[in-house]
Image 1 (cartoon, rainbow over the protein chains, first blue to last red):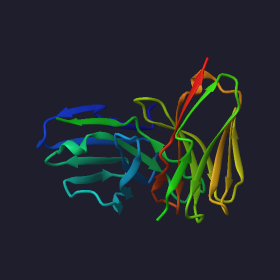
Image 2 (cartoon, rainbow over the protein chains, first blue to last red; image 1 turned 180 degrees about the vertical axis):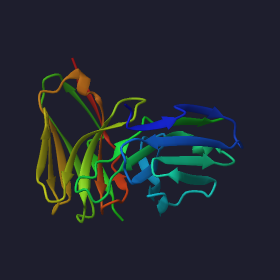
Image 3 (cartoon, rainbow over the protein chains, first blue to last red; image 1 turned 60 degrees about the vertical axis):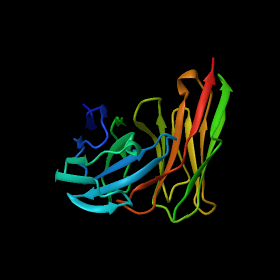
Image 4 (tube, each protein chain N blue to C red; image 1 turned 45 degrees about the horizontal axis):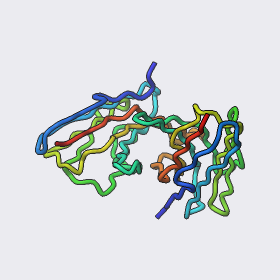
Length: 114
Length: 112
């Protein structure tokens, strides 16, 4: 059973298009995250949701809009895609205030904007 | 602002060698520190998590230590194997429920 899953795994699209990436976790966690890993492999937080509420919103263009329909899902919609959006996007989840809070990551979505 | 640095950026060792990966962070007020492994083209696998009150954690051939006051953690890998070849990432969490701040990783190659 996959703990954190993302779809699609690969996404190749033209500049200017709008696309969505979906994330689901079956761990019962309250907090979910989106991270971006750039071409230099550096991972950086984009957004965090706790119980469907936005709690972290880093300096990310407003073309990126996260949506959490329920606690188990956090989707990422990107409008007007640009070349610089090409990266690997990772979803993650954790359970706060457990004293452990291991963060579990999805397999990543490799986005290539042409 | 928390910054995490990992040294070295890349490391190549012969099979069987014991090795140490280093991680340092600028703000010692952390909640926990997590070591991950990332294989090429894959996601992140959690290896060890050390709570701020702990000094070390062990899992098999891996041992991670934490010295919060000096802002340092080390990941010790005993008797390295070619299957250990991957990028190892260190990340700190500052408060419960907050983001992870990652280092840039150490790319490890273990040669048969």
